[in-house]
Length: 310
Image (spheres, rainbow, N blue to C red):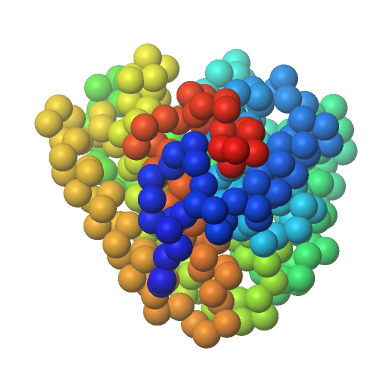
């Protein structure tokens, strides 16, 4: 797929002139939503993440209307909130698994009145309702529900793998990445974006872009793990670096490059009429990988919020 310069270049605090207006407008709309109208309160999801989150979505789909950008922003906040609950919450693993099954039901549009107290569940239900009403809501909602369930069940698998690593058990990389490619969130966000973008060809072209996404999700997971290994070592979390052991980082970096190339090759063979959906996926993963080359969602410069830096 032909990439724009904003996708090719590393993340900086400057934007090429030709992309400045749409990206800046999208970035500002997302930030306004995050601070004022998102169903998840900022205190629950750490506003320090907002600059990177907003710019990631703005650069991936600057043509999307503000309402659609808000859905994607809320979805990323949901991912952060669930990840924090898994890593920092005090629920036993069986209770956490039950809660995540309830969240999956909410994301599938089912009623969970027992969670009316929970802002994460209310956000999940809100996301589901907006996606169901979107242009491809009917055609791709079942696929969306599957991605959501895979994400949440894989979060529990990662908790179990973390415990196994902490107890000295050996893990193979494929087992770890089978969960990690889901928990990085690319599949959930890209599927939601495809529903919102609404290209009719995606109703039949989903499988082709899904095949590309699996490789790109793996690349994003490896980029995340290479950046976050010190923090996750302190947390006792599973990480690809810990799975391969000392001296394994060069192999992981090669694998990252290979998976990224495979994903982009598959995108270049995308079905006719899926250009915007493919561009969103490519741009989203490009931002994530570039972000993790130098920062993470906690340390991304706050000045990127400004119009000059968007």
